[in-house]
Amino acid sequence: MVWFDIHYIHGDHFMKSSPALSSLSTVNVGFDEIVARYPDAKSIVLGSVGEMPVYRLTLTSKTHLISGLSGDVIQPLSDKQAAAIAMSRSSRSYEVDNVTLLRENEEDSAVGQRGRPLWRVEFKGALAPTFYVSQDTGTVEYIRHAPWQVFDWLWRLHIMDYQDGEDVSNTLLVSMTIIGLLAALAGLLLLPYSFSSSRKAAD
Image 1 (cartoon, rainbow, N blue to C red):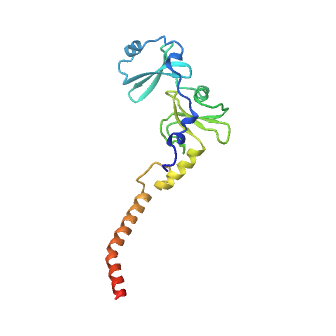
Image 2 (image 1 turned 90 degrees about the vertical axis):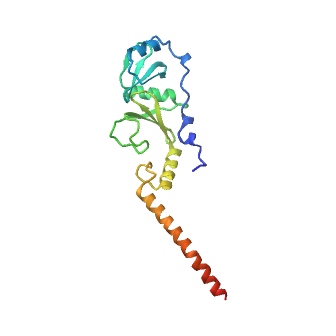
Image 3 (image 1 turned 60 degrees about the vertical axis):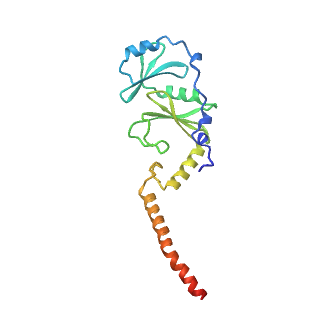
């Protein structure tokens, strides 16, 4: 497992870096103004969605997008916006094949149920990656591609979790560990008898 470059497995090579804030459109709404409007915000981060500057505000447990141009709250991203974000962040030119919204309780074997709601943006091509874009924040949360699928199955075999590949203390793994320990202890207990038998045979 350690032979794999984890950054390659995560698909980092498919995504180009975010544009520098200095290259974005002018930020019309200052940071102090956002703080004054949302004094209860736990965090405020200036970033971008595509070429548009945005503030990402965390209120309670939910993140909201605020336009850095108008100061207005940006509604949850549409499928077209998610596709545009995925294409703008991709380091290669791909054509979008399908865009699907994954809600709270919808299962996806590649990402489980983390980070919902997510837009799953699938690109055309057998070896093309799939981008998962947060509907709330506009960030690319996960990238999945063919080598990741291979790594995922090897990981599931390694931890003996064939459901979602996340439970490293599943019943099967714990049972096999206990059996292995008992077998090792039994071998240690029988080792003196083995030496004794060998000596008697030599005499």
